[in-house]
Length: 106
Image 1 (cartoon, rainbow, N blue to C red):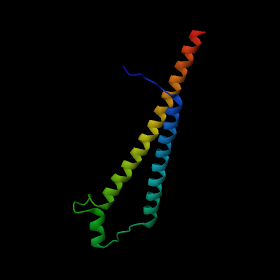
Image 2: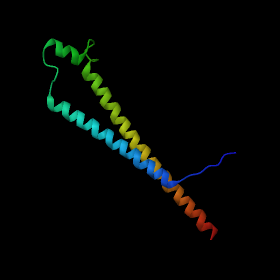
Image 3: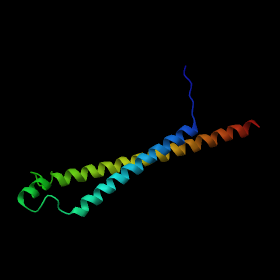
Protein backbone atom coordinates (compact mmCIF):
# COMPACT_ATOMS: atom_id res chain seq x y z
CA UNK A 1 0.00 0.00 0.00
CA UNK A 2 1.23 3.51 -0.81
CA UNK A 3 2.03 6.21 1.65
CA UNK A 4 0.49 9.61 2.02
CA UNK A 5 2.81 12.53 2.51
CA UNK A 6 1.91 16.14 2.90
CA UNK A 7 4.41 18.97 2.79
CA UNK A 8 2.95 22.32 3.82
CA UNK A 9 5.90 24.16 2.28
CA UNK A 10 5.20 22.57 -1.10
CA UNK A 11 1.56 23.64 -0.82
CA UNK A 12 2.65 27.18 0.00
CA UNK A 13 5.01 27.15 -2.98
CA UNK A 14 2.17 25.93 -5.19
CA UNK A 15 -0.10 28.63 -3.74
CA UNK A 16 2.45 31.29 -4.63
CA UNK A 17 2.61 29.99 -8.20
CA UNK A 18 -1.19 29.81 -8.47
CA UNK A 19 -1.46 33.38 -7.17
CA UNK A 20 1.14 34.48 -9.71
CA UNK A 21 -0.88 32.94 -12.56
CA UNK A 22 -4.00 34.68 -11.25
CA UNK A 23 -2.23 38.03 -11.11
CA UNK A 24 -0.70 37.60 -14.55
CA UNK A 25 -4.05 36.71 -16.13
CA UNK A 26 -5.67 39.70 -14.46
CA UNK A 27 -2.90 41.98 -15.67
CA UNK A 28 -3.10 40.68 -19.23
CA UNK A 29 -6.86 41.02 -19.55
CA UNK A 30 -6.88 44.44 -17.90
CA UNK A 31 -4.17 45.68 -20.27
CA UNK A 32 -5.99 44.30 -23.31
CA UNK A 33 -9.34 45.74 -22.23
CA UNK A 34 -7.80 49.12 -21.49
CA UNK A 35 -6.02 49.19 -24.82
CA UNK A 36 -9.11 48.19 -26.77
CA UNK A 37 -11.35 50.63 -24.92
CA UNK A 38 -8.95 53.51 -25.52
CA UNK A 39 -9.14 52.94 -29.28
CA UNK A 40 -12.90 53.30 -29.50
CA UNK A 41 -14.79 51.68 -32.36
CA UNK A 42 -11.85 50.17 -34.22
CA UNK A 43 -13.98 48.49 -36.89
CA UNK A 44 -15.49 51.72 -38.14
CA UNK A 45 -19.04 52.86 -38.44
CA UNK A 46 -19.60 51.71 -41.99
CA UNK A 47 -21.69 48.65 -42.84
CA UNK A 48 -18.68 46.33 -43.16
CA UNK A 49 -17.29 47.40 -39.79
CA UNK A 50 -20.66 47.04 -38.07
CA UNK A 51 -21.18 43.65 -39.70
CA UNK A 52 -17.84 42.40 -38.41
CA UNK A 53 -18.38 43.83 -34.94
CA UNK A 54 -21.98 42.66 -34.55
CA UNK A 55 -21.84 39.46 -36.59
CA UNK A 56 -24.44 38.05 -38.94
CA UNK A 57 -26.91 37.43 -36.12
CA UNK A 58 -26.50 40.89 -34.64
CA UNK A 59 -24.88 39.66 -31.45
CA UNK A 60 -22.40 36.98 -32.51
CA UNK A 61 -19.54 38.96 -34.00
CA UNK A 62 -16.26 40.28 -32.70
CA UNK A 63 -17.78 42.23 -29.82
CA UNK A 64 -19.63 39.22 -28.40
CA UNK A 65 -16.60 36.97 -28.92
CA UNK A 66 -14.30 39.42 -27.17
CA UNK A 67 -16.71 39.78 -24.25
CA UNK A 68 -16.84 35.98 -23.86
CA UNK A 69 -13.06 35.69 -24.07
CA UNK A 70 -12.52 38.48 -21.57
CA UNK A 71 -15.06 37.00 -19.15
CA UNK A 72 -13.47 33.55 -19.45
CA UNK A 73 -9.99 34.89 -18.68
CA UNK A 74 -11.37 36.77 -15.65
CA UNK A 75 -13.01 33.55 -14.47
CA UNK A 76 -9.72 31.64 -14.86
CA UNK A 77 -7.90 34.36 -12.90
CA UNK A 78 -10.48 34.15 -10.11
CA UNK A 79 -10.26 30.35 -10.07
CA UNK A 80 -6.47 30.42 -9.80
CA UNK A 81 -6.77 32.88 -6.91
CA UNK A 82 -9.28 30.56 -5.24
CA UNK A 83 -6.89 27.62 -5.75
CA UNK A 84 -4.13 29.65 -4.10
CA UNK A 85 -6.38 30.44 -1.14
CA UNK A 86 -7.29 26.78 -0.76
CA UNK A 87 -3.67 25.66 -0.98
CA UNK A 88 -2.65 28.15 1.71
CA UNK A 89 -5.59 27.23 3.94
CA UNK A 90 -4.76 23.53 3.58
CA UNK A 91 -1.13 24.11 4.54
CA UNK A 92 -2.16 26.18 7.57
CA UNK A 93 -4.70 23.55 8.65
CA UNK A 94 -2.22 20.68 8.41
CA UNK A 95 0.41 22.72 10.29
CA UNK A 96 -2.09 23.36 13.11
CA UNK A 97 -3.05 19.70 13.18
CA UNK A 98 0.58 18.60 13.29
CA UNK A 99 1.30 21.06 16.10
CA UNK A 100 -1.72 19.74 18.01
CA UNK A 101 -0.45 16.18 17.56
CA UNK A 102 3.01 17.18 18.83
CA UNK A 103 1.51 19.00 21.80
CA UNK A 104 -0.58 15.91 22.64
CA UNK A 105 2.54 13.76 22.83
CA UNK A 106 4.37 15.91 25.34
